[in-house]
Image (cartoon, rainbow, N blue to C red; front, side, top):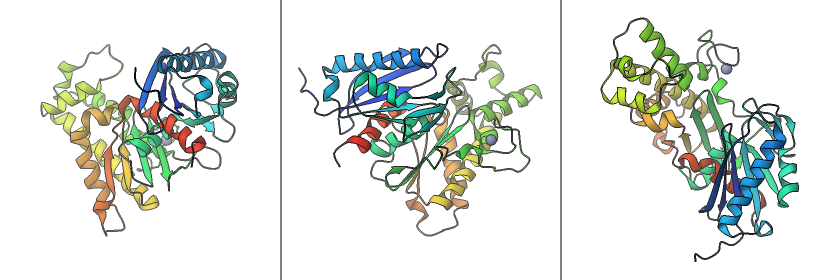
Length: 329
Ligand SMILES: [Zn+2]
């Protein structure tokens, strides 16, 4: 039998569709994991019960008793008050309004709990044991349905006075530009999210532009899969390449502006779109961002890299956030 891990941390990734829990060694090694579906329509109590059960399953697999756990971290969608562990609201989870997630898990599992926003927590994972390991200050940019953002400054997650910092997706890149999900115009999200990319592709197809995508996508799909986007790009499809070029350009503008504010060691780009299309997106992102750096000295020292942890970023980040909060200093 494998040697038993000492003083492990529990990392939980609470998503709109599934709950992942992992038992993680203090060095960031996943020892055991468990997964269940999120009962997202059944309200907070049902979700918290599933989270608790998922943690118990992971503990059992690792043969760890709850009182051996050094601390618990959880990443959740929505706006979080980290000091109280209360989720103020979460648009992806029905009925989540001022939910005391941290206190409820603490009561159920008997160990200290730290709660964070999911993008913050994933970026913290990349900072602690992923692409940003060894850095002090890191920015996370995750283009998806919107654009998630996170800031780690001098080794600490920066969440802001009201827990609402890092809304990087709503930095305005084009005054009076396309409509954003927030109701305003020209936000980064409205120009360079996955949603914006799909909007532009579908509009071009409607206008009759020649493209291999016509044969690759199914009209019944409400999403164009990342693999299909990459396939079209690999075929040299002009529409696809131009659209990726534009997405990379706006992500580069965004990164360049943020670098001018923060001067971090690394900007980490993650999510399914980046993962699938990084070979087309990342060179444009890097070139564009660098053109906008005000400080022209040592520009190669500012790294722009892709996330490394994939689906484990949430649980690892939550566990590492618990380590930095409750672990031995
Ligand atoms: Zn916006």
